[in-house]
Amino acid sequence: MPSSTFSNPPGLSTPRGYSHLVDVPAGRTLYIAGQVAFDVEGKVVGKGDVRAQTEQVFRNLKTALESAGASFSDVVKLNWYVRDVSQLAIYREVRDKYFGAGPFPASTLVEVKGLVIDDLLIEVEAVAAPRR
Image (tube, rainbow, N blue to C red; front, side, top):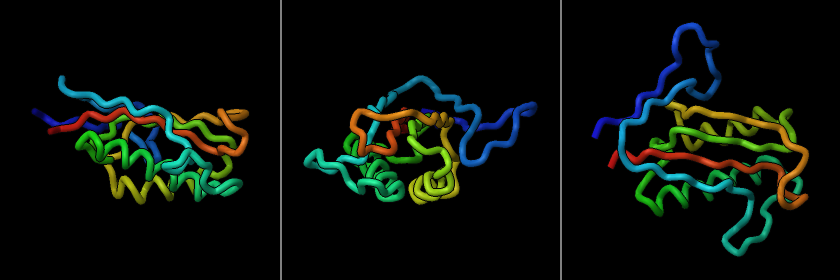
């Protein structure tokens, strides 16, 4: 099966850490629910610490992907919900540890007033298209 194609079409701005367009050939698709900074016991990790919470979110995404035989290289879309957009550099730094040099998935980041529990600072959902 052909792999997904990540691109940034002419006429659109140059993105920083995401792709404007991901073309996914027909095949298997994984939808990962929004992951928050819960550990395996459902306890909040890193209260008040954006970096610790973002790290936990990406560990959770990795666990979900690996359970389906996928990896971050299969992720085609991320939706971010954050309490403080001024922490963008931290979000990107943690993301880059998991995605490396890319390609980066299509991505949307939205600042929100709150999440399901007040102690949560970030939630990220993902869509993946495994090549296997």
